[in-house]
Length: 235
Image (cartoon, rainbow, N blue to C red; front, top):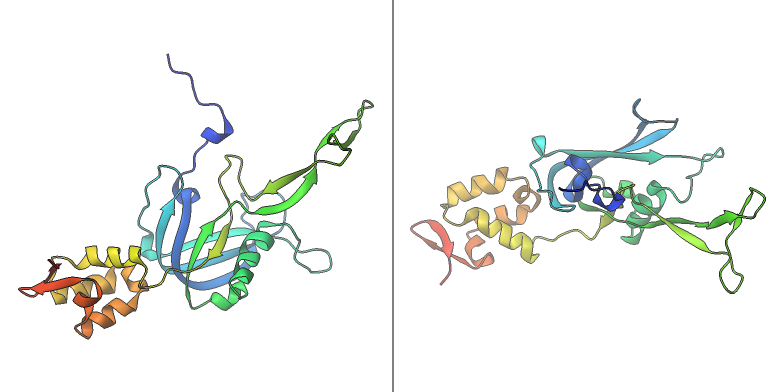
């Protein structure tokens, strides 16, 4: 007899929730009203990518192709009564802070290819509470009499990170990119290889390879050789 899974850590993610890392052309960042299905009131920030590809998934989920190579997501967006960003939110600590670490505001990445990754960043800390014996709650103390704090991370109930952060973008000469492009063109003639580089969602993000093909330098760039007008592994 098999017992069912019961722990929070056994709750998986699926579909778009399981996307851990994505790369694409950042085309828009927009404030919108939150979906009717969400509880409470407030707004959201909607982020849109084009020429996008999924780079990594959580757990054992397999990456999938994106319709029209587009990817979008929303995150809660809250302001104080004075019109300031509420600190300690996913928008503040993940989205905005990660862009700042790369030397920009998020909107300054619009029109550029970016790599985004969900990370379990620290949002804020709260005091651990305990019953004081009268039904009231009081901060729990450690052996030295100090109040015990607990980290609140940007994770969902199943423990997976829930907010995208900007991370250092992949360059065209990154080895995993070269390996991917190499796999696309091996066995193809130059005309077919060009077509691949023009339509493949990930290859389109690195026009340097298309330019190299047009200049007759793609084989050398990828450590390949051309035999009977086809790209093959160099011996």
